[in-house]
Structure formats: C-alpha cells, structure tokens
Amino acid sequence: MRLYQQLILFMLAATVLPLAIVGFLLLSRSEQALAQRIDEQQRATATATAEAVEASLMEVVNGLARSAELLPWERATPDEVRGMLMLLYGQSTTVSAVIQADANGQPLGPAVFRSAEPLEHHPAFDAASVRQLAHAVPVEQFRDGGKGQAALGSAYVHAGSGVAAVPVAVKLGASEEAPYAVAELVFTQLEALLARRANDGSARLDVVDTEGRILASSQPARRMAALEPELREALGSLQGADTGRSFQLKDPARRVSVAWVDALEMGVVVTEDEALALTPVRELRTTVLASVAGALLVLLALGALFTRRLDRRLAQVVQGAEAYGRGELERRLPVEGQDELSELASTFNRMGEELEASRARLMSWNDDLRVRVEEATADLRAAQLQLVEAQKLAAVGQLGAGVAHEINNPLAGILGNVQLLLLDRAADDTDFETLRKIEQSAKRCKEITQNLLRFSQQRERPDLRPVDLNAVVRDALSLTENQTRGEGIDLVTELSADVPRVKADPGHLSQVVLALLSNARTAMMKTPVKRLTLRTGERDGMCTLEVEDTGKGIAENIRPRIFEPFFTTKDVWSNVGLGLSVAWRIITEAGGTLEVRSEAGQGARFTIVLPRA
Image (cartoon, rainbow, N blue to C red; front, top):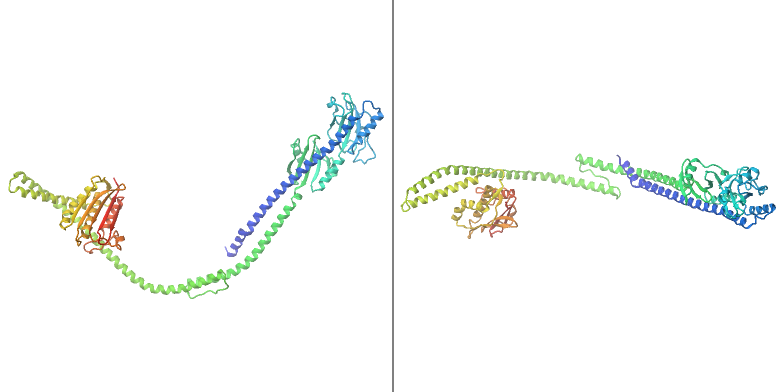
C-alpha cells in the first residue's frame, strides 16, 4: 500500500470517521430526545384538550340541570313549557335543539330550535330528527332520580344534516313518570377550541367516539370521517386509560397521542407527521453529511500535495540507501529545510561518513583479528595438551587400580602365612614379635590397596545414597595420613559424633576429600606453621565438612577462577587444574555447595555443605 493511501486511511480513521460516528450518534440521540419531547408535548396537548372538552360540555350539562331544577315544570301550561324549553335552549350556543319527552322516551311536542342559523351550527329539525333525539338517551335508566338529574347519551350523527352531536337528558320532576328535557349539543365551540390549539403547532386534533368516528376536528373537512383501521385498532386498546398515551404509526410515519374522557366516552387524538416534526434534526443530519464530505475532500487534496513532496524526498533516501548497498559510501543526500526529513537526510549523510570511517577501521582490524585468531589457536592447542595430560592421569589411575588389584592377592598370601606362623609360636618366642610386625605391615598394605582399589572405581552417574560423612573422612585419611604426617604437618580431626548421614556418592565424596587434602598439603609446603584441620558438623539443617589449612592462601584476583577447569597456579607437569572443578561438580550433583574462604598469606578453608539423607 502506497504512502498516500495509508495517509488517507489514517486521516479517515483518525479524523473524519470518528467525527462522523460521533456526529451521527449525537444526531440519533437528539432525534430520540426530540421524538420524546414531541410525545410529551402531544400527551400534554391531548390531556389538556380532553380536560377542556370535558369542562366545556359538562359546563353546559350542569347549566341545563340547574336551570331545569329551578323551573316549575309540574304546574306549567304548554306555552310556559315551550318558554322554559326556550330558556334551556338559550343557555349556550352549543345547544342546537331542545325537546320534551315522556318517561318512555316519546317526544311531547315539537323541538325548540332556530332554523335561521347556518346548517353547520344548528341543523334543521324534522320529525325524524325529533324522534332520533328523543331516543338518543336511555332515560329509563334513571327514573328513580330526582328533579334536575342529567345524563349524557352516546354521540350520534344528525339524521338530517350529518352533523355530529351528543344528547343530554335532564329530569323535570321527582316522580318516576316525570318528563325529561332532551337537548342536542353540537361541537361548534369544540372545533374552535381544537383549531386554536392546532394553530400553535403542526399537529392535528380530533375528537373521536368509541366507534372511531371523528366528531370534531381542527380540520373541519375531516368531520364525521372514520379513523384509519390501524389508528382505530390502537385506540381500542387505550379506551379507559387514566392518562395520555403515545405511540407511532407507519405508512405514513406519524406520531400519535391520545387522552380519553371516560365521562363522555370520547377521546382527543393528536396526530403529527413524523417527517415534519423531525425536520430540524434531519436537516442537521444533511448538514453534517455535507460537512464530512467537504472535510474529506479538503483532506484528500492536502494529503495529495503533502505526500507528493514527501514521496520525492523519500525517493532520494531510497536511492542513497541503494547506493550504500552497492558500496558507494561517498554518496550524500541534499538537505532541504529544517523538518524531520531534513534531519533524516543529515543523519543519513553522517551515517555515510561513519560507514566510510568504519570500513577503514575494519580493514585495520582485520590484521588485528588475524593475530588474535592465531593467539586463540595457540591457547586452544595448550588446552588440548592439558586435556591429553588429564587423560594420561586417568590412565595412570586405572593402572594404579590394576596394580592394587594384583598386589592384593600376594598380600593375602603373605598375611595368611604369617598368621599360620604366629599360631605355631609362643608369645615368648624370639620370632613372635617380628612376625607380629610383619602381620601388621601386611594388614596395613592390604587396607591401603583395598582403599586405592575402591576409590579408583568411579562411575559416570553418581550413586546418591545415605553415607556416613565421618567414615568417608577416616577412609580418605587412611590413604594420606602417613604421607601427611611425614611432611611435618600437624593433622587435627574434629569429627562430630552427632552428625547425621548425608546423601552423596561415597566414592565421589572420597575423591573430593582427597583432592582438598592434596591441595592443602601442597599449599603448606613452604609455610613455617603446618596444621591441617578436618571438622564435621551441622549448620541450618545441613551437614558440613571443613578442610582448613595454614598454607599460603589464595590471592583475591584469582579467587573467582579457582573452580574453572584447567585453571592452576602449580607447575603444569605436576597438576592439570581439574581437582577443584571436579570437586565442585561432584558436590553440586549431590545437591550441596562448596564454599571457600581465604586470604593471601592467611591459609584457606574449604567448606562442603551437603543435605541430610
């Protein structure tokens, strides 16, 4: 992928895309908040309008009930009855007609109305309209009520004009057979109220009945129209709700809120086109899209200009690198400006200068390296010679084991014959003491050869088992005690009787003790005070063996190297430098440690620390 493409992807990922995502998320939340606010406003409008409709109609109903209760209907003449009906008719312009009906709902006389009014306000009444109004309220349901009791009937459509109306029946007496005044209320004032509330916004307000018919609307052309099936089905589930409800309809998308008036069995429906209501947010979304597209175009243009200049300067760096790859270290790059690429060119030039200098140094180091290789080869040859000497010593050890084995058999014969001679001599015989000394010397030689044979049998893998540390020390001393004392060394042993058994290979452990005793004897060859101390004991749950001498000690500069293979300060013909390294390996394989404490001229103390068995 080219740098320009990577830069475009980076700008999209770092700037445009996050801004677009954040912007659309904010717009989506704003749209949801606006829709929620519209629903709240619609519910408030529906509830307030429903309360106003209920208050307006109930005000008329209560006025008719109070007036009917005060008038003397029982003693009135027909003309007076008509006059009182005219009085009820004049209570409100909402009343379009008033008739008198008997207790069975049959009309008593003609209706009272003003036929000169426009049809949409006060429809003309004929005989069919009178019968319809008389039977619109089931008056038989409240025969037991008192004078002035009023009841609302179900909304209906006027037979002659098709205008929606609601009937009101008011009882005119206290007896069960008392007549009723039935008034027809039209929604003239309600439509004016709906129109006023609809002018405050883009919503449409309708008053509907239980059958889904529009009784009154802020748009008069919708009067007595039927609601859409989807809306009528939704309204059927909301009848009887105490508070307003909001929901959404599709095809077309609308937001609807309903407040139901149980007392009147009517509902107020507020409907608003969703696209029109959410216009501000959708216009803002379009603006954001245009802004993002414009920003992307600007970034593309600027990125193209920048990457073209960047590609040219990077191409110079590539050409310089290829020249260096061909060995043209004198190649230099032009430095332009003071930006990062200029710093890169300067660094590249400095690198060329250093490469030239390095090549010159490399040529001179080549000769030095040849000399050093020759020196290393000589050291390797010396190490090989030391390894050959070590193999020779191993062969000598094997030879010593064979010799010890061959000597052991004649010694057994000598010892047996001497013991037979002792059996034939009395204790006061002159040869008895001589034979006793011969027996002791033979036993001594046999013990020495047996130890030598046992110690020379080494194994590749250690046989770790419980071992008596004191016994290993005594066996090792049996091989070197006479030689040690013969060199004028004072041998001191402090073997603790309570020391537990250790987990080690007895043959390997004896080899370690012998190596430490040999090093101690060699270190004390030229010292005035010669004392060798062997000490066993316990420390922190571990068993210890200390070999301490009063020799020349170990200098500080060579102390870290004493456990290295083939490192020695002795004559190469007398030692190959493997004793301490082999001892350290044996002790480590047994799970212990080999510690040293020494100073030049102050002797040395080696401490073997082994785990308990």
